[in-house]
Image (cartoon, rainbow, N blue to C red):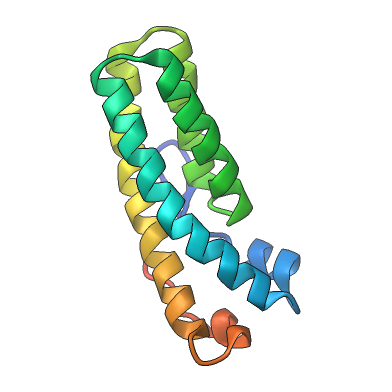
Length: 136
């Protein structure tokens, strides 16, 4: 797992995901498919809310991003979403936008990893653990 700024782990923790989902790969595949859709929607909502400085809407989108990233063991993504939320709560627009930009990059990397895992699982869900994850 790579590290993103300030020693935040980047990407999916495959070891943690394996520990949680070994022998339940079909459930993991369903969760990753849902993640693909939800993360794109939530990032778009976050971007729109931050552009309008709708702090309530931004915090709702961020709460969802924290939850879905934690579910797929994308700890860096979760931590960045929390940090954006803290900046929004402090009404620090400049910091929130800078962190949201980093969060967007991390989401893109995590999505690439999710796609690699789903491609590996296409023929058989247990092959998900054989996925070669691109750097996040």
